[in-house]
Length: 77
Image (cartoon, rainbow, N blue to C red):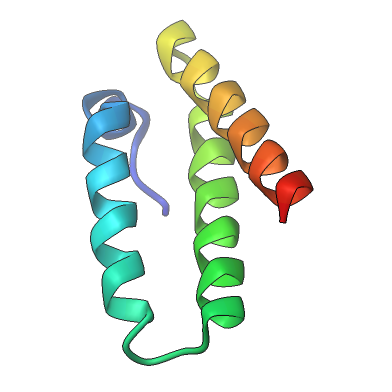
């Protein structure tokens, strides 16, 4: 979470999605569905915050899109 800005730039949306998907699979074996979803949403928002505060425009846009997606999924739930 305290990764330098240049390292944040190297993480693409696809890479982050794979990490989140794999972590979600792991967490569902340990926690209830509600707890897992809450943890994943919190992680998504933390990652989005890091991206949004980046110096790189493409990461800022990625962070904003992730925030919007997380809000949309929370709205549906």
